[in-house]
Image (cartoon, rainbow, N blue to C red; front, side):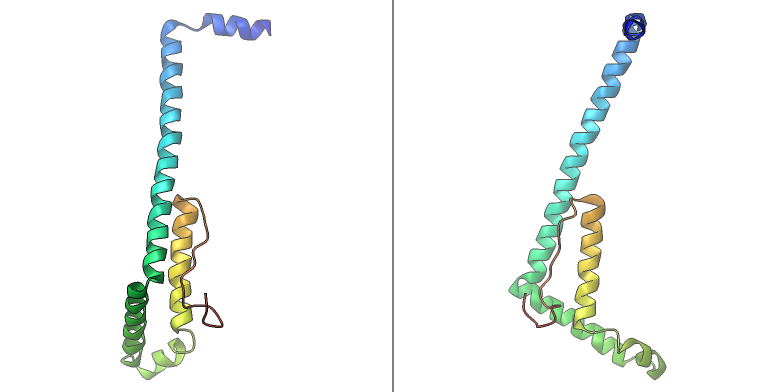
Amino acid sequence: MELVKNYIGSITKQGWIGIAIALGFIIVMVISKKKYADTVEKAIRLSEQSFNSGEGQKKLAAAIAYIQNAITLMPWYVRLMIVPVINKKSIIDAIERTLQRISNTFGKGSKVDIKGNEEDGEN
């Protein structure tokens, strides 16, 4: 304990200023990270709501139809490999996984669920 008192007593005025600046920087970083995570989380929620809205479902259906149409224009040997794995559920799953990874990395990691990829077709 005496050693700690001696060490603290030996810190100069410039040292205390440096410590205060470092602590201030750490506090700003923590606050900024929380605000950044909140912003990312709001963006993820807005994306999810957009996909789940009536208009979003129409756009999602149009995107899926476009992908499926593009697959029909590919050579037969490519279609042979792609058709069994590319369907509405797999496309929506890929979108969900992407949003989930963004949420896990930059946000709060809350669950993302887009309507349309459930086994029974209900959400």
